[in-house]
Image (tube, rainbow, N blue to C red; front, side, top):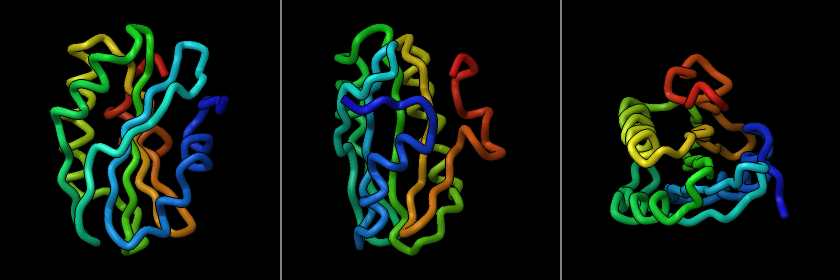
Length: 132
């Protein structure tokens, strides 16, 4: 079972998504002991944008254990890992769902071919739960 202690662990788990030619959005669930419970594709799209199934996101968060933590990952096929305004808005929406349902939000990673951007590790730390 994979341990998810830091952003690098999420990246190592899903870095193969950086090679895809179109965007995919993945929501992951981690136990209180930081064991990976699972991850699911909740969105896909073109090489420049994706559509997220918010019903799927809601169901996955609702059905996760009450003490679970949630992370979000999506790839940027153009290899530019800099978040867009839409990326920020999606992060805010997922965080709000987690807040309402009493789940911690660990991080949102944007994965490129050989690099990644972590909301937790970079300037956008306001988007990540304070207890993680």
